[in-house]
Length: 300
Image (cartoon, rainbow, N blue to C red; front, side, top):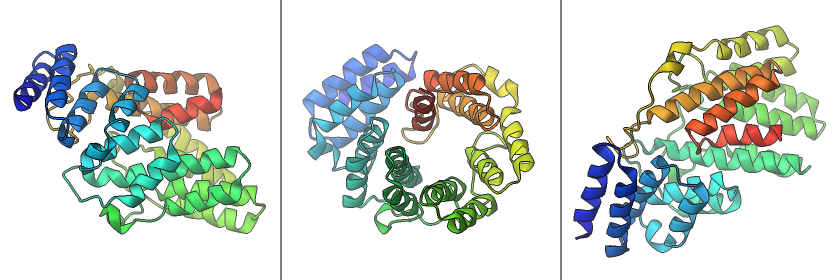
């Protein structure tokens, strides 16, 4: 019976995007089979698409953690929600305790690991704890064996990480190591998977260039981010979220990322009003965009 309600829920989601009925059916499936971690994962995907608050989704997964931890996919959703809600310590603890096995589209678990450490480090930096922040930023460079994600050839998110390492060294009055880190941020080419020629890594390269006294080069990167093809923003959003769970990025998420990138460009050029506008649009389209949320919190 649980399988029947699950299939009915997915059918409601795929055919007409009737998310209210989809959620009702999936909740019945979970109630009938509360020991199936896959159902919690799929329920959260539906809840996310329906725009349910992250706090409500986290409560559901938290309340069933022993079951959720049986599956890489459901546990990854729990960890992502903890990060969204600022529970960095627990997110990092869970990431370290569990051995994640590579599944289709599962390479993003390392990005989750990086997000947890960078956001906790930034929180520590804001609280005048630069030594602890530096430890988090350095940890973000690691590729733990238990995540089963290999180090990318082009450096992954090193531009972002090394910029923040440089900021931590600045706070510790170590100018030599700070400049060395900023230079590494500029030199790392990364492996952007953005839907345009521009990436958020360009923002951190631009900030690093500015720190190194090459502000004109940095401004060119910020201008490039703001020049993202506007036709990409006019595409009609599509909630085809369920073609392949965990694999296909929804149209809303794609558009949210484009607004985020434009917002970063504006932020780099000190255009606060435009940056707030673009980041707010990003969060409206994708309430789970942790970095757009972070930037908006900084404005406040």
